[in-house]
Amino acid sequence: MNKDITLTLIANAGILIEYDGTGILVDGIHHDATSRFSPVSRVDLLHMRLGKQAFKTLDYLFFSHEHSDHFSPLYVTELIHAREIQKVFLPKAASLSPELALLYNHLRKKSVESEILSLQPGEFEPFQLGPNITGRIIATRHMGPQYQSVINYCYLFDLSGFTLLFTGDGDFVREYYETALSGIELDLVFVNPLFYQHPQGQKLINTLFTPKHLVVYHLPFPEDDTMGLGSMVERSKQRFQCTERHTHIFQAEKQSLVLHP
Image 1 (spheres, rainbow, N blue to C red):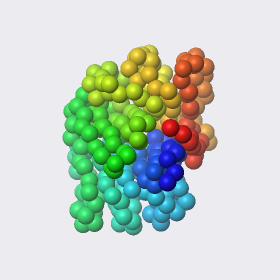
Image 2 (tube, helix red, strand yellow):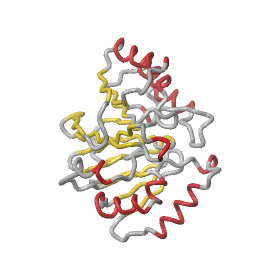
Image 3 (cartoon, helix red, strand yellow):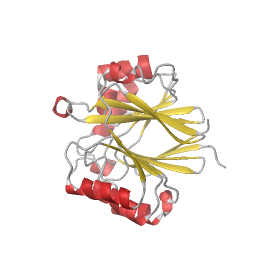
Image 4 (cartoon, one colour):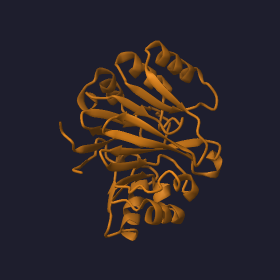
């Protein structure tokens, strides 16, 4: 069995983790053509349902929060209807939309194991996907004053001792992470551009996370980047360069990083 870890950008903050014969998709099922951030292509959504290309193995789905550039319940429902998924982790809805009600119904109908998350900021709980894949769910608030009512779930994965943290749109508040990460050495952390740019975000990266690898994601594809976020992050990378850390910018579709722990 191949024990390398392959991380592939699907779109925006959607990352496919492939490890030890297991496929894990984080924030990777969405399609909102009105968003400033790139949607998952309809071709990829079809390949997910058919189990083709990058999605031949797809076992677990994780979602950080119910914003349309991270999670589209309708497309998750279509996927659940089309193929077998072992378990889905998703946030408890602030209000039950018809699309989310349909997804909940399909999860029950297809007997798909699911965990509806309802933690408060700073709380965390463990999960286990198999003997070599464990982790923690860490609740934070969504960054930005207009989104403080939204709970964002960060996911810490431990793949046979190699640790990855996905922060989604988590706010850069130390108290949200400190207890959950106590005693854990992080190998790789994903942060969005606002987290990366902000002084408090940089402070967390350098004093609490201290990862060997840092990936900046949640960027539009270059052809969709009307805000110039990619160029901004490239400039910041030079400013924040750290000799003890490898910094990667994930912006190209199907861009991947293969790790050999």
